[in-house]
Structures are given as structure tokens and as C-alpha cells.
Image (cartoon, rainbow, N blue to C red; front, side):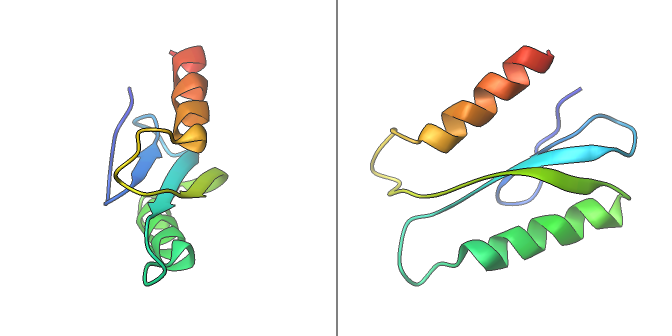
Length: 79
């Protein structure tokens, strides 16, 4: 089972476990660290730990997001 939470993605099963997360910012005023902290807090509230991170600074105007593609490949390999 794959679940999407928060503004960014945390993929997890229905039991407590290690998780993988993706964060993306597109402007200088946005902060990867703040998004990461929010995701870690949400995961911890469920008893999960984010052990794998995918992060990038990419404009929303482009679909070229190498880290998101790596995350998608990881999920496909698990399913």
C-alpha cells in the first residue's frame, strides 16, 4: 500500500516502518529544510522514520525532475 501525505510525498505501508520522502522547492524564498522538517514531524507522529530522502530545486514549469524519477523507480521496484 502506498500513501501520499503532506504537501510532499512520504511513501509507507500501513504499519510503522522506515519511509522515503521527496521534497522540491522552486524559488529562493522556499526552503528544503522547512519541508523536510514538516515531513519528518508527520512521519514521527505515526511512529515512522524517514530514512531515504530525494530533494531538488526545480521549477514547476519543467517536468524534468531527476530525483522524483528516481523515487518513482524505487516505488515501482517495491510494488
